[in-house]
Length: 374
Image (cartoon, rainbow, N blue to C red):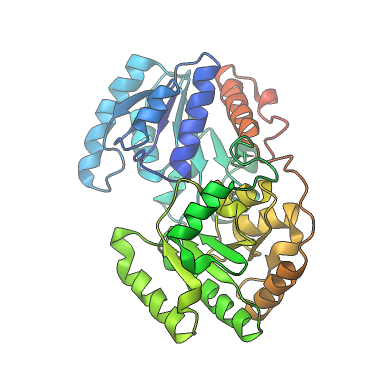
């Protein structure tokens, strides 16, 4: 079994690659990942997979030279499944598999809502196309001529041992956290996780904090992950906005942290305010698994998850007035959050391996597991 991704640095695609690789290795299968490498490679290997370094994510005509190398690799490994998780690696694998034995099956995963067009269409070329949400499935059907029967919805999942229900940080962690960010003391904490890009809705979160303050509702806002070396001009822009709105002392701009579980658990609310539909929304299920309320715009994968798991947190997209009202309501009284029963990591791993097995053993009847929903 071979998975192809551009690199193994960070992100949801990379995380899914490692999770499936670990499941394959645990089940006794050979798991190989082809990528340009990155900081996650040691973990990949420690969990039982092999890594082959190829710069298959560089958007250059020079990348075409990797087709021959991939063809040789596939001929050597003779994998049952070649699974591409990104567009350029998928194109390279597609050409490398020309005239390959029928025993090699091509699978793709549509992890995102990529701009429709010929380049993105490669993600619909798999014998089976995994969509990470119904939002992605509907997007593929509406933009491409694809048989819906080839699409299998396998949502991403989380490990409930990492995000246990009702978890609360210990006193040592809390003391260290508030010593690092003293501005966050003294009022309910709102956390918006997301990298430093406009689509994540950081400006809306700052405006929300200001609107609540004018109503006499004190909050603190943590923009977690917004600080990145290449995005500091954007951070400066957000800092100016916070100053203009009179909440500069109520907002903290932070880099990504490894202890997000404790950050979410210490938050009164977790926000998901992307102005562009997300394909899935893993942070929604991470927070809800911890029994922390989530408020988000009701579009894309975030809206899909909230509709099913926490309808009280849904707000019509870009309806700022409703956003302020809903957050104020939930800060007063938040509906109970039941333990998470779905969207678990083991479910995703089991469904993915079941799909592989259905192709490798030419058994279409076993294609849909109890968790794969199409």
